Amino acid sequence: MELVAASLIGVSFMFKSPLALLPFVLAAYDLLSGKLKRGETSWKLLLAMLLVPYVLLLPWTAMNAHVFHQFTLFEADRANQNIITGALGITHTVEGAYPLTGLPPGASVMLWAAQMVVAHPLVYVAAVLRRLFLIFTWHPWLFTAFGIAVLRNRRSEKFRILGLFAAYFVVIHAMLSVEYRYMFPLWPALALGAAALFERGKGACGAPGGYGEKWVLFACLSALFFIAYAASVPVLIRYAWRGSDIARILKNPSALERLRGNPWALGKAARYAIVSGDVAAGERLAGAGMLSRPYGPAVFAYAQSRVAQGRSIDYMFRQKVMDDPWVANQDVLMLKSASAFSQKRYSEGREYFYQSVARWRSGSMMFKGEIDTANEAQLYLRQQSMGLVLGLESRVKYFLDLFPSQQREAYRAALAIPATPAEVVELLKASPSARELYASVDALPAADGVGSADILVALARLRMNSQFDLLLECGRKYLSLHEDAQVRLVLIGVLGEIGDMPGMYSQMRALRASSGKQYDGAVAQTVYKLLEKPAYKAQFSQIEQLHRAGKHAALIAPAREYLAVCPVDKVAVLYLATALIITGNYIEAELRLKQAENLPLSRDEAAWKDTLRNNLRREIKQQTRARLAASPAPEGERK
Image 1 (cartoon, rainbow, N blue to C red):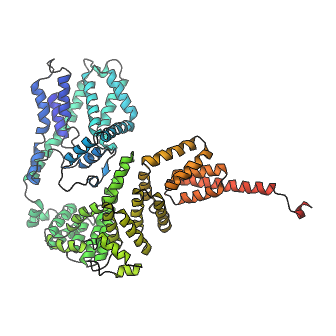
Image 2: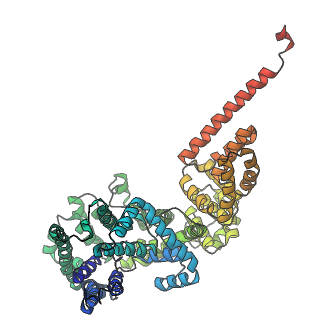
Image 3: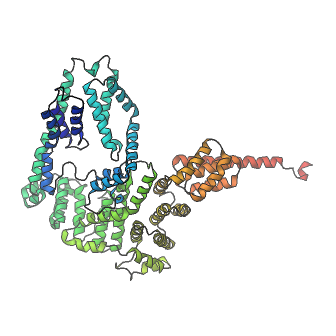
């Protein structure tokens, strides 16, 4: 049985590696439980348990060594982001975790993570406990039923092994940041164990017979895994020791002819030909792919071939040729940028490029779960402040890869940021109007001036260097000349980061006045992270307790004090408005409701605000009627 288990674990490594330490855990269990002393296992079987899973990885490691010239036992850096966020004490997974480390390219993530855990052990332990609790809350009844079943059948070796596997799987994931899908392999195991509660008598606990059908089912399922492994091994070997298939196809007309009905392969071959310098061959291949299927990689490669030849692709967007799920928005913007550069429209090309970076960052720089602690809130702000600059580095490489190698240096120079932050600041100081700002191009190395994208890059670099005063001066000056929602969003984040909540609220009001509710989602996320700081949470908790206790008169003073410091807390504003209406202070209640209108309210919060406004109007009407009824009638009416 040990050989079967070891083989199945080894086959699972071909999918993912969470069971990497399970062979050692099972071997330790056999030793500590006395199975070795009782003769139920042997040293040979234990050695097989420890070696066989990794022997089955030899085709994979050989392929990586031959192709990439490095030793890769499991994935190649696939878990780095989880390792980083796990060491930092973040509960949920994060997209774009590298900005949180400040590591240079090529540095060891494992070594950095170990240093972080040693330096802040309590932060790491607290995060592990939060992850364990989070995993339990996903299916609490299933975990409870499984635990009861294991305790009830604790004398059964099968249940002890199943319980050990479940505990291992949960703990190994809790050591790093987690998300729900990571637990998918565990739910069937828990459900099978919990089902034993419905069996009468011994059932699965070790009845002497009745296991024939179960063994047949187990053998069939195991066979599927072994067949998949056997099929993948020749593919890995062939992939490692093949020549360049695309290069061979391009030189072999008969092989090229076989791709005529495969637009996906034609698109890939076309892109290879373009970046290798054979643009004409790439255009022919991409055109053939478009004729058989007018969307997908072939369309992208065809546009790429036109860009490499300095020809326009604008007509492809007018006719919606590129409107296709195969092509992400950020890639389409990158193509538009490359097309503009090839037409020598450099300012337009940079604008498209920065838009592509912003789209990339919105999907690649985010926290996937709720922010649970002040530590996570600070890490989120750090990630967002560095995201644009770090995003530039990766997207520049992607952009240059669109062109043949002999054209890349020219496009790298065209893409260069036209001004340093200091140059942008000096230019803004010297420009009393937007017209003069865009006319003052002599101080810049670029030939066509500075635009909002260049301002954003300058602000991002200032933010990354913690030059907040200079950043705010630069951003406010630019906004006095030209309204720009993205620049306002940068200022909102920075003002919140340095604790200037009134200034942050002022920028939020200006953004709402210029752009409506378009950016409420981004603003709400930034505000939410900031309000997780302990100082704000403590004050808000006091206000919330008073509201729930119905002590509205006592709530007003601390709420006013809190909102004077933190006017962006929308729930506190609504709590105060509620208390003011109940206590009869209608004038201030109206002002607080207007304050709430400038904050990014959710649907429920907006409904709450509307209800309060309706109640306020009703109270004012009733008060007016009461005053009229109580006032004496004029002399003429009494007669």
